[in-house]
Amino acid sequence: MPGEKKDKKKEKGPAEITSCVYMFPNGDKYEGDCIQTDAGSIERTGQGIHTSVTGIVYQGSWENDRMNGQGKLTNPSNASYEGDFVNNQFHGKGKYCWPNGSFYEGQFVENRMEGEGEFTDTEGQVWTGTFRYKAAPGLKFKLAMA
Image (tube, rainbow, N blue to C red):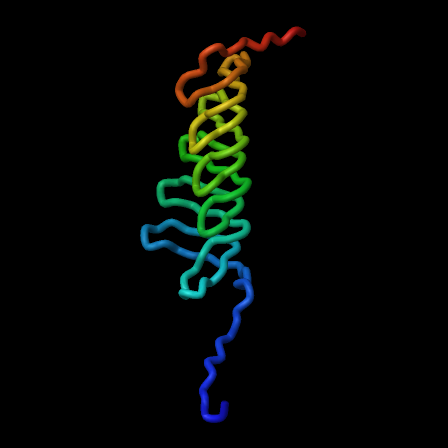
């Protein structure tokens, strides 16, 4: 109708992914893909590297400003996790390596070894079975015949 004002709102498409370097107030640093949200804040998305002031490094996929997808997290002690992340947690299939050379490869649920997996000790001996966080009843020794 004549004289009526119509609100014309611009419809925004998906935010454009750009490359950024962001320094957090605590001294952490992020380098990688990011977007600017409608609210104006910067959000990590895509591929990137986050380095904490304590020396923890995450390199991998980001979604919704969280570690989501494939990535690798390394601690200053040289312990590391490589595999699936969901909302900043080890979740899915992955491999956790301790500084002493032993490692677990298998399923993780919310940062815990949960489900089928294999633990290889410092002597190279392999134990396989179902892991339940800190317990692993009924593990089987996997004998390597040469």
